[in-house]
Length: 151
Image (cartoon, rainbow, N blue to C red):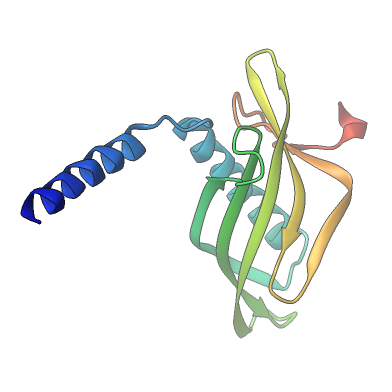
């Protein structure tokens, strides 16, 4: 019985070691750069387009390969918050939102990956983009978000 338990333990150790040593189909650098772009997009779209919002803060942000297609799809999970203010600038409330984004790798241009946000879901609503919103995580320029019209 002890031999069987020892053998089972050895098999589990070998299996767990192999699981931790598997390479990810999407590089760590890509995850990091996509996360940075998501942070900037959220800040830009919330704070700059809504003058009554301030003090934008990303509490948590992480990405993971999608189980559907781990080589070309990412799921991003984000918890962010901001202050909602009166027109005079007085803070009314702090709002926190949890969201899930589905991104798909759509192209590689001159050693630059292009990721498209397909869905942005919050617990109470979902946004499906009519016009694709693309992320260029490598070689960032002043224009982080490009639509099909500007290409």
